[in-house]
Image (cartoon, rainbow, N blue to C red; front, side):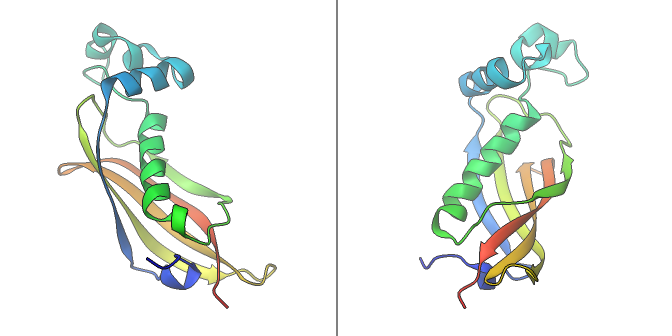
Length: 147
């Protein structure tokens, strides 16, 4: 596969980033280290919360998406990082054993006015569990051009 560059990321393009099953042990390790809230660490606390059970940190879910994005796009691209985003929504809890399907959609793009050879690409990333959306966020990616 050829290197993915700015020119390849056209508005409307959807990229399937694959599926992953949420691993309970990995989810708990992430929570212990980065987001040690009771409903991310303890079955009973999760059941007694509005979330209804032991659930993943939203940051963990976003990290799973990021790994899929690296594996399917960034590892073979002209990526130059990201200046950030403007939306992040965790729309449903994620539980151990859930199978998440990741995608990205290119919303818009423009060439940088100050940095020749660089384009800014607005991307929406999503994670779905069956018919339910569990994660949605929008950010800018910086990609080198081929020219």
